[in-house]
Image (cartoon, rainbow, N blue to C red; front, side, top):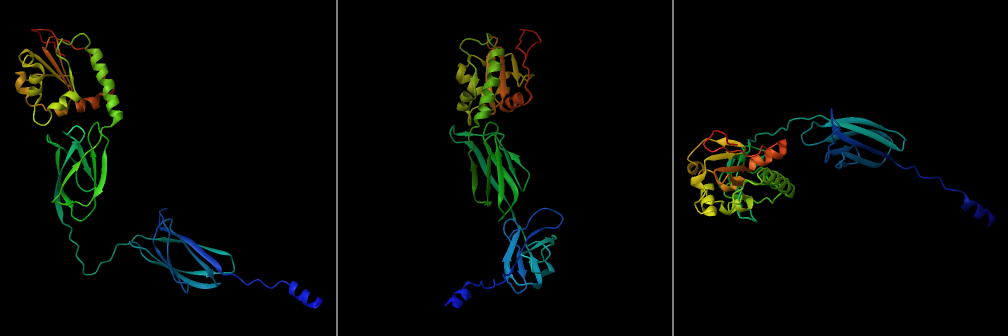
Length: 319
């Protein structure tokens, strides 16, 4: 019995474990890794690389093996590796970019035109001069009715569109273009831009303090967009001031520059309220000052130092 106990206490020899062959597949000449590449180790099957470009084979017996790596868009790579008794064998494989070979196949991409509109849903306002950019064709601006058209986009190819109206958060989306569908984008106001505009409006009001005429209050954007869509600035002024303002206007300042076009009615008829940020009448209605949305952006891009309004009746001084 003592001999039996002693025999069972003697340790058994540990079975030898196979070697781990692991590595990474990358683009030759760069640090870019290649995911979903097929890695085939002779006698041990194939595996796909991870998103980090790594692969792993376990329990590989020592010996000489052929390792083959293939990936879409790259030339295949084969090499002979020596697996010895080390615990881990590291392998790095660099693949060179190669053109795809397609036999007897002609791919013809068709182009289509798509149309759409950009609007402020909360105010039911069509947004004028909104930038519409894509990853396929040249960008464009929305027209006076908030409409845009993109020509020659690829049919059946995902299209990325970025819409950037001033004063609104941008819209960034990807979709499959369809010529039979009209696309409507509805960005929401950017609170940061609204705050910046409020600061600039405060500067304008401070500069013109004491020059406003009683009963002729300035029209800011919230009031101007009430007339958007079907009215011109002339129509808006006639309604707001009951036809008392237009005949008295002798001096028009638009974006800090004097407009020489008179009579005023014809010029104001060509301006859309939705393009504007503020309109004010000064010097008993003799001067009208107009600020566009684009000029407001220009103001806080360059931090302009605005001059006080000056008007001399029957003179040439007006700014």
